Length: 134
Image 1 (cartoon, rainbow, N blue to C red):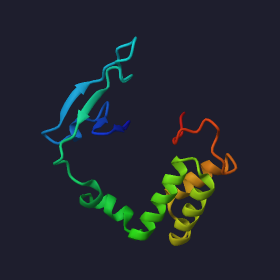
Image 2: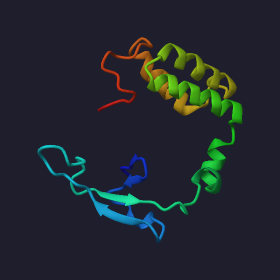
Image 3: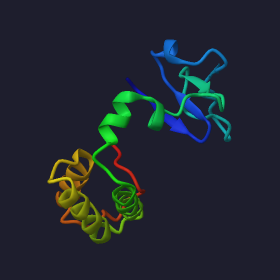
């Protein structure tokens, strides 16, 4: 499933059946020229109401997947993510290493990000914009 999120919108090309009843859908605006298009073409933009369920606390699978983390561990992981996005990969590495110690090396996201950063010797590329671009 392709899922892109910006501020209050989700873009889900093929999964419209998962929406709450009060969600609204509009098409992307791919106008060219002097500045109006969002570059999304015909992708639907889905506005989710504030009544959408809180997946972090209401979805049993998500709750179970997150259960091995304490609040402090989530806080340290978020510090790692903030440093990672900011291009401070030496700092991010330390935080993700701490998370791995607490999880007996089983935290998949930390392992993945450490592996990607290792490919660049834990130094963000000069063109780093806070995310991987494929």
